[in-house]
Length: 146
Image (cartoon, rainbow, N blue to C red; front, side):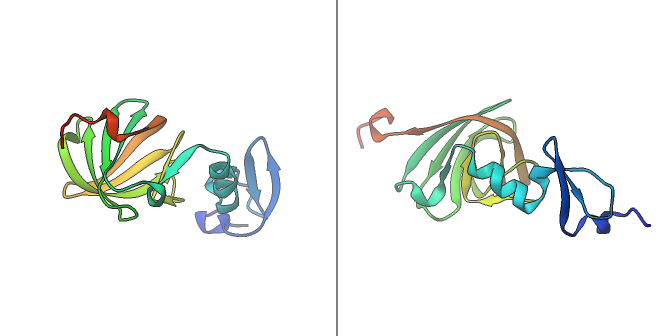
C-alpha cells in the first residue's frame, strides 16, 4: 500500500482526538484540515463577514503579534485599507481574501477570531498570526469633523 499525499483524499473512517483518519491511508490529519472539519470549526468561531459591514467601516484587529487597523470602504468588495505590522507600516490598499487555520481551506471575506487573515497586495500575499480579537469601530470613534 502506497503512502502518498494523494491518498489523503477519500472518505473518513475514524475521528479521534480532533484528528481524522482517511480510509485506508493510516495517516492522521487535523480534523480542521478536512473540508467538513474546517466548516464545523469555523461555524463555532466568532467573526465578521465583510458583506455585513457598512461602507467605510473601521476594524481594529489584534493578532498574536500585531494590531491592525483596517478600513472597509465599500463592502462587500474585498478591497480594504490596512495598517499594522512590518508589512503594512503605512496605510496600504490590499485585497482581503478571508480567514484560514493556515491550511488550504479559506472562509472567504470573513474575519475570524482564532484564524489567520489573508491579504494580497502589490508585495504579495500576507498571512497574519492568529486573530485574538476584532473590534468594529463606530463613526463616533473617528477623528472629526468630516
